[in-house]
Length: 100
Picture 1 (spheres, rainbow, N blue to C red):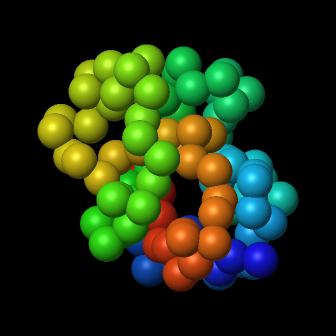
Picture 2 (cartoon, rainbow, N blue to C red; picture 1 turned 90 degrees about the vertical axis):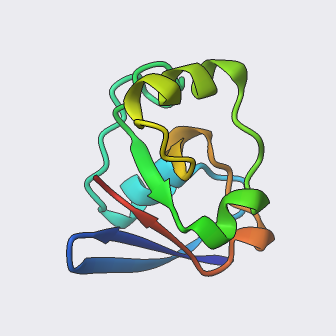
């Protein structure tokens, strides 16, 4: 299991996440309000989160489609990603993601 912290404002929710699940799935299972309008297909951008900069290099590279969508949504913030495209691994233990 991998510890993930979801943060919105001053509120934090720490969960133990099963490897192989997406952050969107983990959020939903933990009751964290994170909308995923396209059901995890990575095409709508509603599950955009901001990843702790210390973990950006540990993430799987964004697909060209995700990168294009993030270019439109993120105003150049390099730590912006779609929660539905981040798969939990041991390397992400302790990750904090901030919800907009």
